[in-house]
Length: 269
Ligand code: ADP
Ligand code: MG
Image 1 (cartoon, helix red, strand yellow):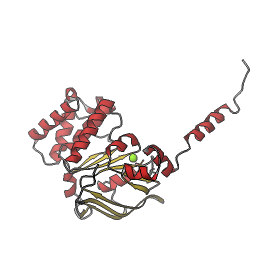
Image 2 (tube, helix red, strand yellow; image 1 turned 135 degrees about the vertical axis):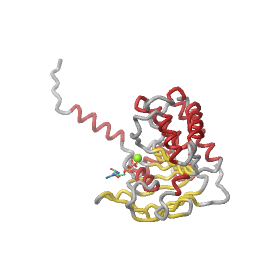
Image 3 (cartoon, rainbow, N blue to C red; image 1 turned 45 degrees about the vertical axis):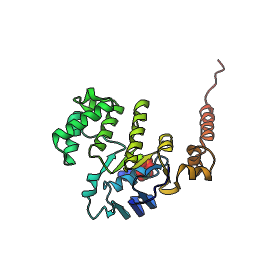
Image 4 (cartoon, rainbow, N blue to C red; image 1 turned 180 degrees about the vertical axis):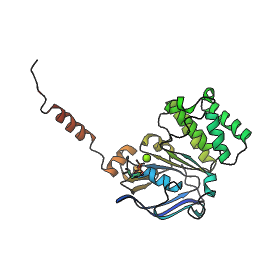
């Protein structure tokens, strides 16, 4: 994708550090994200991706450093910017007793939308995501993929300017993944900004015009796929493996297999 001519910073993270107890999980994160970018925020489990997202969402308030979203420090006005963002959390296990209609209209009303308006919009989105038939079903009876679609719909109701997606496609069927990828590309064309966090590289590789690799709380690479590829051979997965040192799976597998054999009694049957 072509670099946009006018860069307008929409998220700015400066010297972000975060610890849980004595454990440092984010180490001097610095990031400028421009309007209209689709960022792939990639790294192995435990790297600190969800923590970064939760801090930007105002869900974790204790950290060092500064975060500006839409040009304002999020601590100065912790409410206003949230009206213009959408969030798909990594795990969401609230509201299980509600129906999709109850849940989505509730979320829409939190955003200040009229009941009728949000009800109609939510129903149409359910139809487009191919789950209209369960609009009045209880969410706790849904499959993982259906729940995930409801969460994605809830994140889009307010037509957000920035969308934060944390492992958004878990449990979603292959056809719907294709639809969602298309929707995300369309939204970016309209000038929306997407922050897509995942430990799975496959979708991000195709979708993102900028990949940020996080390992052990530090940014270890930041650039377009082309930038990264010109530095290193192979797919993003091998880039990722080189950068994170996680290139050891066959050795580990061999170790496991030889350990399984050891000491087992061979009765020579
Ligand atoms: P990722 O999303 O990249 O898998 P997380 O941001 O969830 O990583 O976690 C980063 C590190 O912080 C991990 O080591 C995790 O165990 C730790 N961590 C996350 N949340 C908490 C918490 N609430 N309390 C203590 N440690 C946490
Ligand atoms: Mg995570």
